[in-house]
Length: 215
Image (cartoon, rainbow, N blue to C red):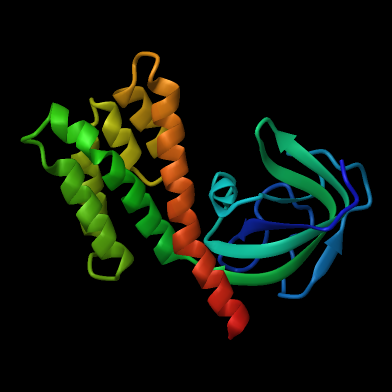
């Protein structure tokens, strides 16, 4: 627990409202601060934020990525720590990253895809689904095409690697580790995958926040 000001990352819904866990459901505005007067308990009460964009994605209720400052009572959560709960949160900046979130999910899936293709070299359904998801993110494919590609790929999901190619980007790390490392190398494989995803998230999302600040 600390009284220092902490910079972190947080996601909001598309209408700038908070997801579950925030009793004040008014839309947030850049520059606004809100304070919780009661006890601060991670996952239960207080205003939350994560130390990295990757950690924030794990708890994202929507597509608006926010840079925030936490102050007052700031309580860490997790070992290793993956978020804080605080009595006060200030919204410093915000940007809608829905397209980039879809691209990030595709990147993570594609990174794990060789695990599937080594086991099923003639099954192109997961790769086709990823390509369709990329086109959908760019506005070049319809929702019907995306749903059809996802359904076809799900039918190929007997291998763990395809679990990495669905919408939840963080599933890639867990699925890739399970498929790639059934022995003592498992933890190292998972750590390497998570490291790659963290670096990819930083390179994809942080420039958008900086650009929004500059503008």
